[in-house]
Length: 356
Ligand SMILES: *Cc1c(COP(=O)(O)O)cnc(C)c1O
Image (cartoon, rainbow, N blue to C red; front, side, top):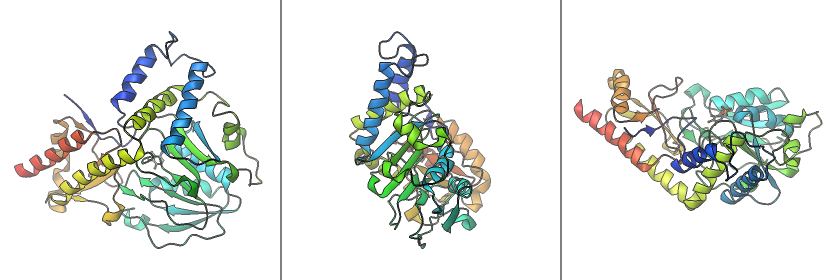
C-alpha cells in the first residue's frame, strides 16, 4: 500500500532525492565507487559540495558577504555555537517552544540572555507579539517554525539588532530577507536531507567580535576557511541535500514551493475548521504553521484519538501522532509531501467523522 509520510523529522524526502541517493550508493558520479566509500577530497565530492553551496545561495537569494556551511552536530549544536561565536555580552531570545528553550539554556553559558517574551505558560500555543528587543543586544534569536507546537513566524521580524534564526523545520518554504540576519541555521532532516548535516548561513563580518577563546571545531571561521572540509563532512547527507536542492530549483524555486505549501496547509486547516470532532491547538490562526499542523479531538470525542490513528494507518497514513507535550495529532506537510497525501488525510478525517 502507498504510504503517506507525515512524520515530523526525520521526515519525507522527494522521490527524486531518494532515487538519486540510492543510485549513488551503488555508483557515485560514474566513479565505480559508492558515495558511502568515496573520499571527501575527491574531485567528484568537491563538485557536490560546490554545487550544494551555490544552490543554497541561489535559492535563498543570499547576498554577498555571507558564507554557507554544511556542519555536523545537528541544529542542537548551533544552540551553543551561536552564542560562542556571536555573543560578546548580551543577546535577546524569544521563547516559543522547546527548541527555543534549549537554545536559551545554552546561551546562558556565555553571557546575559534577555528573554524578551515567552508563551510557555500557554504551552506555546501562540507566538508572543508584544515585546521589545533591547538595542544593546548582540543579536535577536528566534525559531521561525515551532515543529512541536505547530506555530510559525512566516516573516522576518523588525529588530534594532541583527537576527539569528533556527529555521530547521521551515527553511526553503518561503523567501527570506537574508540581509537582516547575522546567522541562519537549519538541521537537514525536515526539509532537505537525511539527518547528519546542518546548514549554517553566516554573515562573515559578524564573526571575530568576541574575546573568548573558541575551540577550533566550534569556531565558524575554521569551517569557512576550509569550505566545510576542515574535518570529514557528512558526505552522504550532503549528497542527498544536493539532490533536494536541484529538485527545488526544477520546481521553480522557493516562491513556487511556497504556493504549494500554502495550498496544502489551507486544505488541511479548512478540514479541521469545518469539522465537529477535530480542532486546532494554535490559539491565534495567524500563528498557524504551514509545515506542522497540530490538532486534537474536541473534549467530547477525545477518547477516539487512538481510534483515528488506527483508522488512518489502514489508509497508509503514518506519523500523525502528536508530540507527547501537545497530544492529539501532528501532520507535517514538508515540501516533499504531495497534495495527494493531504487529500488522503482529509478524506480519512471526513470518513471517520461521517461514521460516528
Ligand atoms: C528538529 C529541530 C531541532 C533539533 O534538531 P537536531 O538536528 O536534532 O539537533 C532544532 N530546532 C528545530 C526548530 C527543530 O525542528
